[in-house]
Image 1 (tube, rainbow, N blue to C red):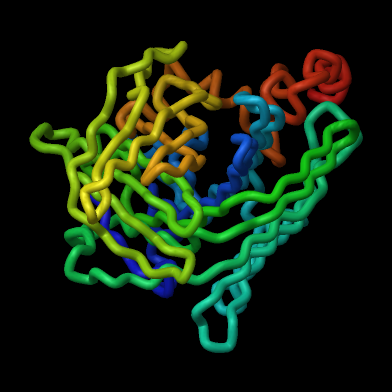
Image 2 (cartoon, rainbow, N blue to C red; image 1 turned 120 degrees about the horizontal axis):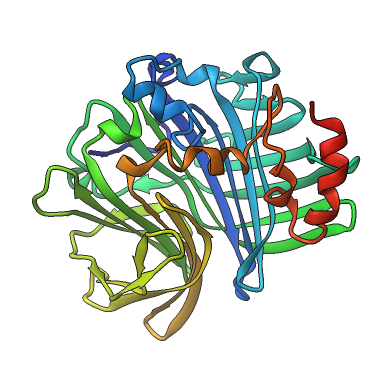
Length: 368
């Protein structure tokens, strides 16, 4: 279902050229109060409206023909800013040699230390917001030791399609964002990884996908629980990453607590727990469901381990439910296609949480 690959392995161009494939880079920040953000830049993101549907119909485009970038900001246990934009392919440039991406003016760059053990991720944002003249501008900066696997024998069984690469954990990042009256600044613990595949997400054999990470003073824990769509036992992965980048995979069973129903049919566990390599429990409570839908949920997490309290994020995905006809019109309301057409109700779901209804009339006068 998934192969864990080292942080230094380049993204295969086959995933971008594959019809229905995908490559996405994920970065999040969270602080001790639970404030945070998630940024994903991608080619062929499975959640784009129409992408999985086209693959099921045998007419999927190449992943590189559907570039997108999404940013979510959280404060007080809820989403306070949301921006999901799909860009025209000719406005997006990825230079894998120099490790830069340009999404129509938003620039992302990796840089590395001379010995290759550290990576810095710097993101400069400059993006239009539907319904207003203001633009989202800002900077996100993360630096830390690249993950270095100390247990190669424990890596995932190879899968021909999907590669998952944890890259930066147990490190810090900063963010400053501005859009009209909306402003946000934070310093927090960072997480950065990559997922890529040459086949659609729904064709990977994954029925249900639980992932999460939680940070403590000198280490992070990551869990993955994958339920095969054909039935049978779930696959469990638990990782520990220290601040020096050393990554250890520890075979452990992941226990899911009682389900908490969402608003749109999905139910996520209220807690996730597993032992560390010394048998001490890692317990993560999924406190706030900050993104809820019929195929995807994202949670803010509060964890406890060895007497410490930490924070992080968790996700729950049902790949077989992604991009179904019943849900697609509602997903389109949340995605700003820079080449159009767009939903008349897009400003209700994008930009700063405050003032969304006031942006509707201005959007309607500009939307054909």
